[in-house]
Length: 93
Image (cartoon, rainbow, N blue to C red; front, side):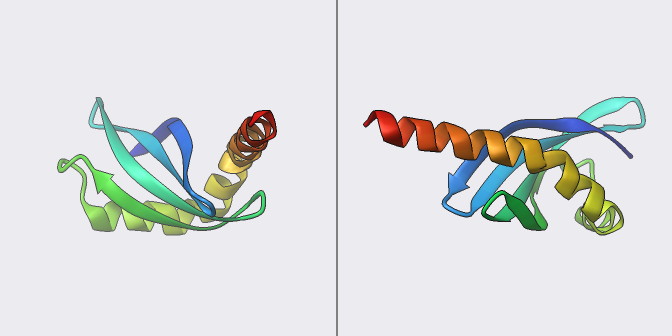
């Protein structure tokens, strides 16, 4: 199981975001919804949401445990971007 990237990163609540983690598994591209719990522009925790049934939940949870720091660093620019988009939208209103 190899992570290709995280797509469709979006805020779903004030301090929560979701993103579609795209994996390559046995030559197939499979998606899993990752839930990112935020504080400010930092990611505090990551959980597994809905995912393709061809992947085991325990495998995805182990992937997050083993790569937590790298995932948090990877989504930091996305967190900053979506927070800035929300602020800009609120200022227009």
